[in-house]
Amino acid sequence: MATLSSTLAVYFSFTLLCFNLISASFSPIDHYLVNCGSLEPTTVDFDHRRFTGDVSDPKASFLTSTESISLADPNPCPKSSPIYHTARVFTRPSKYKFVIKNPGMHLVRLHFRRLRGSLDFSNAKFHVLANGFVLFNSLSMEMGKDVEIVKDYVIGVDSDKLVITFVPSEKSNFAFVNAIEVISAPNDLIADVAQYVSFDKNERIHGLLKNGFETMYRVNVGGWKVTPFNDSLWRTWVTDDEYLKSNDGSSKVHFGGRINYQEGGASREVGPDNVYNTARVIRSSGSSIPELKMTWTFPVTKGYKYLVRMHFCDIASIARGMLFFNVYVNNNLAYENLDLTEVTNRLLASPFYADFVVDGDSSGVLTLSVGPSNMSLPHAVDAILNGVEIMKINNSVGSFDGKICAHAVLKSWKRGNGNVLYPMLAAVFMLLMAFVIMHRRRTGVTDSVVWWRLPTEIPEVNLKYGNQLSSNKL
Image (cartoon, rainbow, N blue to C red; front, side, top):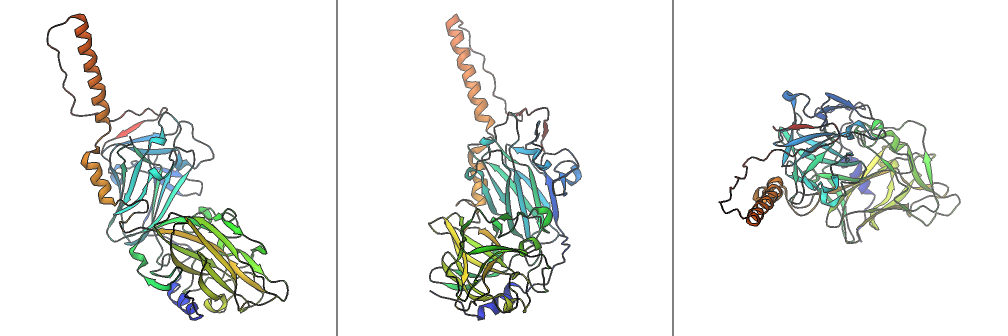
């Protein structure tokens, strides 16, 4: 198995962390927060962010739908954010268009939660596309459950607009969305290089920024849940308890001092203080080094590659140069004798991250471990991990969810899907005609049957939903 020498530390510190420090008060050039289906000009969510209604200002409307319906929950859950109290429903392919002033990587978040009422959201089956990417296919999720679903992506935009398209499937009546976020990503959020790790390879690869990324897991190891209000990119970091497979001999560490962000190093946009000031560690209490590892397991979809980002910050050592440990990805040695003192310019409590690309194999599980190395010292910290992010990389057809490309999804609709109302009304019409014919035969009527012409324009579905209904055809 190929391993990395200590010179890899210099590579990571120089290439992965060679960006300028972004200001703690990150202010994105492109910043769109849209409350879909809302008729209010603004809606404030639980994290004090202001979302704009998608048609509240016709001159600045993002929606270019040919057929859509605005719905409001007649009895919203008081514990859910106000952005989940309304939704926009589509019965045909429909688009949101956003003007992009700052081309490059952008954060795209889609929010979904079913509304209460007469509409059966379990029948919502649809694709979502964005500038050539297939973001997801709702067939892979249960949209009818009463839970909040956030789909979180980082995709490149090299033009002056980002178009997000909702396409109902051929077996569905509608697509829907509750809220959309489009935000310029910091320049240092995703590096263009990483270390590819497999059973027989451990090599540097380039060109990551040609891809898109979907966040599958964002974990605060050893700490508490971090909400968007406490993250400069408005992300959520969950606790690691659900994913921790083995923790014998490990302990949690909490740091009350200042995190030493450095120019050219990991910024607060890469990882917030609340991630770097907590960790899980392995300590040797005596003269012997513990023969154990901390291991986390994450279910993943096979057939995709994943970008694994592991966050480190030595908040536990009493002095510099005392922490050496190994990092394993899918049980393969990814980083040998990692010395955080060396990669952080000999500063304690200074953040560092390492990016690895791995394959989602047939096991459907991605495993991460840290443990002592042959350079670990007694009476010292022998392994540490502060945070984990796992991002799915799009496949060869530009999809995060299946083997159908965006062009094929749109072509499939045009080829014969049409509006699902047509076959429904045609069936009703034929049944009505059959009833008229049978009735006339039974009553002895011999004059010719009067046939009614099938209407060529089908009115929009009248989806009754509480007392709120707003129909828009643009």
